[in-house]
Image (cartoon, rainbow, N blue to C red; front, top):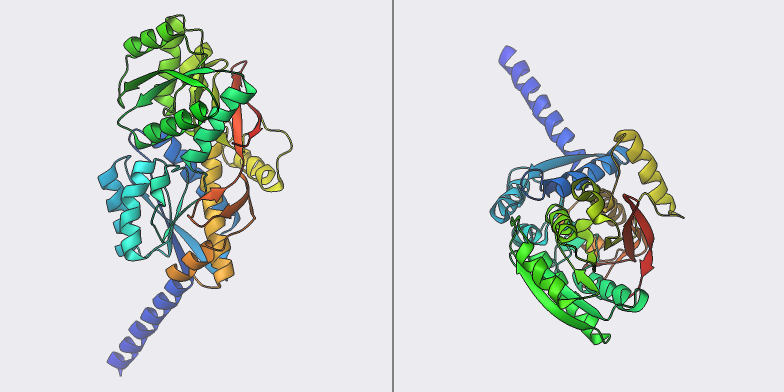
Length: 374
């Protein structure tokens, strides 16, 4: 009799565990929490966590975030996605900062048939040919065209130069798209200089750029190296303007660059705490962020981490299921979903269609100065 009771208890415990598991929807997060890209990856994670705090359930089930550090490394990114799928059995995945890392993890997710919502991975190759990879951000052809249009049309600059990190897919791709569109508009590229991730001395490149006398230098760098470039350019007496991409949209740029970043321009998504006339989702995000992280400014990376969660939860609701394929199918039908960075529609190539913003550093602070259409 005692054995029968014990067996019954074990059976009930097992049934209870299974029921509890059925009541949980797992969303994996693979992002750069250590390594070169850690600052951006951490902001994206915090944005995702804020969204999960606001929306902890869907379809009557608890949402659990399973977080893995991809260590800003391609191999580790693939390993992180493998772990999330094989060990943690996630229903969908969010990530990552860094297009090359997204591409590495995307191959694993594609083979396993698990949908991924990219955060700020803007290289076109991230979603190219993929059935299960989507993204909350626009892509580099759009961003490069917008940067070129603003430099040529709005600022009236006719001569541009490039300073490119040849070891970084993001930098190479965005630089090429700026070049193509700037020349298409009638502008001239007077110099193309190169460096590699991790470089600290840009004197040779900047000296050459100064000799070519461009109106503007397009610098599609990550924020830490970009700030170093700007400081050294000021020290060398450079008089041309600098413009970067969304990877420079980081509160640390001013901290690292000091007064050397004054007047620096960069493209970004249509969100910044300084922007006027925020949409209701952006207002709520900004208010809740300041409560959750007092003294820490939100930026577009945090907003995109938040938006990625919103888009996956929206797809689960519309699918009426947390089955990975059902989520994928619903994501393909995403249209005009209100997010922090504007109304988001995912197009046929799984890329977000939304406005392109322009930010300038003025008086030591980021100022959102408007949007541009390529």
